[in-house]
Image 1 (tube, protein in one colour):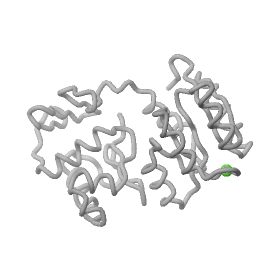
Image 2 (cartoon, protein in one colour):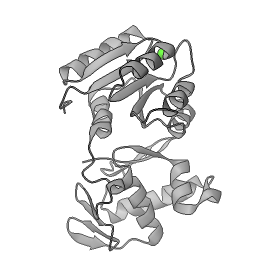
Image 3 (cartoon, rainbow, N blue to C red):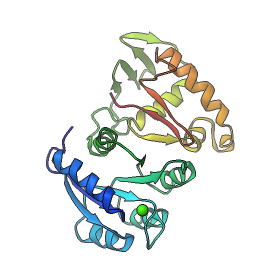
Length: 232
Ligand code: CA
């Protein structure tokens, strides 16, 4: 996948090795990267030359990455992908709840990085938020007017709760949706602690979508964070 029009990406990261790694991949795939080593410098650059996407390290020397997200979100909706260390699921959840669009866990590969950037770039032809009546991804088709779901052209039966969960994942296709967000949107505010609902319903959905529970193609578990419908 390539940045079609030399998409500008600002990288805010203090580790030179990671900057070097990102630079090589992005230039190779026709993105236009720029760099900041501190939060302050990054925020200044965004205000001067707003990029089309931001890659933000959560562990910066001068300011907590979460504060950086909150600051940027006061005046900009530019997609933000955060970089986080393995095992820091809580940080990832908080970054997402603070307005980040997605995250990558270090160390990550180029395919993962490009997939995340692709989602921020997509002028989402199948976005539910664009009020299109039909959503399509891989073999799945959702008729949002009639509330019918098809897998390879065969209609499948979903309960209202399964349908709701599927639609929320579809609305954010390619992006992770946190457990809390799913629980809130499907079951309501009082259900935010009931993570086990999600495990059960994810299993139901995978079965009905003929998704392999061991190697799911559509409904991916992001351990400790949430679920993602992979964009195919
Ligand atoms: Ca760092």
